[in-house]
Image 1 (cartoon, rainbow, N blue to C red):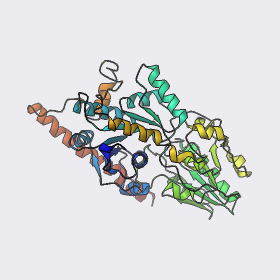
Image 2: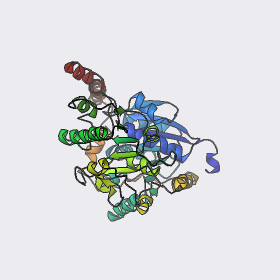
Image 3: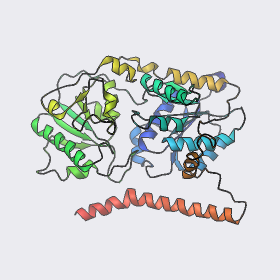
Image 4: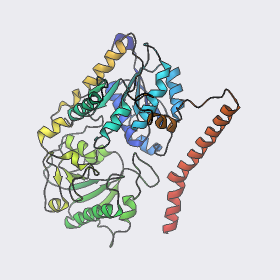
Length: 430
């Protein structure tokens, strides 16, 4: 880092879900291992619980829940060097527009970074254009970096912010096993969505356990009952598993916790399209991406075309252990060849170069009132950054009071959804 930042960098990370917190906090550590990291959680439906935060295992200097306006005020008054927006695309765009007026001219300001928590298999253009305006848009692979630049260049926007890296949570010792003793199915909250499809996958997993009594078969779950994740889980596997006819075999278990610790004992990772597949492939663990429900964009498993990992439960039941294609791995930033230690060099170099400048230009997102007059106002209003909040008159005072009541109502609703409702449902099942 430059001489002007000889002291530990100050990095602010704001996230709106458990997985985005994981990406943001670990990316901050990849950028500057000794950084002073301050954590913020954007208030909303998927605000992580203390257990979900602890599961990431990244120590930070305090984590607190904020609104978009409160975070912007924090950045305005605290001398952060880097601000990482680990948020959904619309929230990133709202934050960029909220931060831009703080530095209307070229001058000293934090470096603003953002990116994606995993595989980008849907809403590519939408998500990317909502992230345009950040100084750094991190791509998790060479494949993503090429696609990101093509989208920006295709609308005539500056693509220089796109910076190739990798997922920040890859790691662990290379797999050296030869026998399949432990099979792990990495569940996803919203893929697939229907009860029939989720029940089918669960039945096949239980059937695999019955066919192979000598194997430990684990269903790795993202959240415990009452917790929310990046995507809404309408039909939790815990509930479906409780209704398996005849019960589950003794070698079948539900597990939670840090994915890295689960992978430490995994001999075969099975999923539909979870980012856990990339964590597994990084360690060279045999990894199967299921085709049972079709290779379909809606499931995200089309991302693994050419990987060598596509397989069905019938094949896995018969003993198949997929072998990943080396060229595909290299393009996807998995770095199974041992090059992961240098994967974030380009990001560090760009952060350093930006911090060394005497000043940074104003934040300039692609979406403005001129380029997206029918889209942008709704995004800003959703995060209460549409410029309507003023206390200069009675109407303004009333608006502020109304907003306060709405925020309190949102908090009560979230508490009801995340805490009270699961208890009521369990009581009803007694």
